[in-house]
Every structure is written in C-alpha cells, then in structure tokens.
Image 1 (spheres, one colour):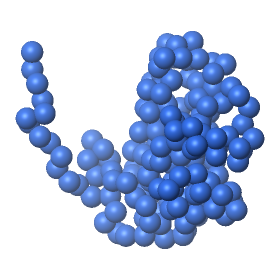
Image 2 (tube, one colour):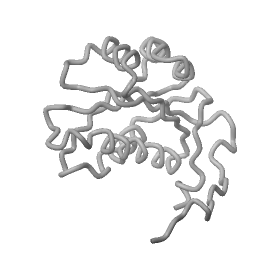
Image 3 (spheres, helix red, strand yellow):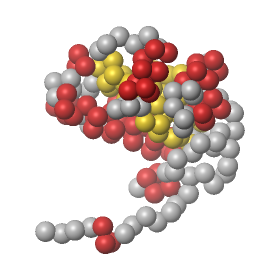
Image 4 (cartoon, helix red, strand yellow):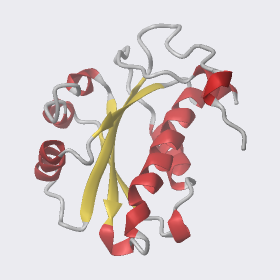
Amino acid sequence: MEAIDIRRSVRKYNGMPVEDEKIEKLLRAAMQAPSAGNQRESEFIVVSSRKSLEQLSAMSPYSGLIARAPLAIVLLGNTERMQFPENWEQDLGAAAENILIEAVDLDLGAVWLGVHPLEERIAAVRKQFSLPDNLRPFAVIAVGYPAEKEANHFEDRWERKRVHYE
C-alpha cells in the first residue's frame, strides 16, 4: 500500500538513464494487469533516444516534459487480440497504473500522459512510430529518476463523504 500512498505525478527528472532491468520490471508490472477475458491486448514501445523523446514531446500541449525524460513508454491496444473491445481502455488503464506504482517501488518517478481518445494525439503517435491500423495508441508514460528528493510523498486524500453505502 505504501507505493500507492506515496505515488505522485513526477514531471522533472535528474537525467540519469533508467537501467534495462528496471525497464523490464515496469513492463512486467504492466503485463500483470487484469484484462477483460484475459485478452491481454496491450503492447508497448520503449522510447529512450533523445530524438524520439523530443519528437514525442510535441504530441500535445502538455507533453513537453517528455523531451527532458530519459524514458517514455507508449501503451498500445492491439485490436487483433480484443475479444472484448468495449473494455480495452479499462485494460490499458490498469496496465498504466501498474507501471506508475512499480515506478515508485523502483525509486523512479513517472507521469501518465493521455493519448486516447484525442484524435490529434493518436495521429501524432501513430505517425511517429508508423503504427499499423491494428495498434491503437492509448497513453504515454514518462519515467525517470526524480529531480526532487521528495517527489513521491504521502498526501492523505481520504474523504469519507465520497463513500456511499447501500
């Protein structure tokens, strides 16, 4: 529960590269996420070249921070594996959250940048990576070592008034 409690959106990184072992752990965490009917439609692009990160940072007015991150992970849904296509966004959302939580456990910081359902962002990601029609861009997660020591910290967000019992 601690990783969930202290996870925050981290947008500033110290520039240190993320080790391959940690990248694999982030991807393993994503692939452990539940999916409708176990369809496991998620696929991932690991982006670490400075040129690609800079290009990806132009996908939206809010994604400029990607240019300063050492790593980004693009989450995709493969329509060829969607037995329950009405659930793909939920499946990819679970995968994204697993990456964010695993990042905390690995002393990394991360931030989720939405792509789907905004057509201009989908088109930008699709074009940059020459994606075939069966791969739907869902989100980009920027990852790196936080520039600030207290990037991930506890903030109590519990509000009893938002809980309703039958």
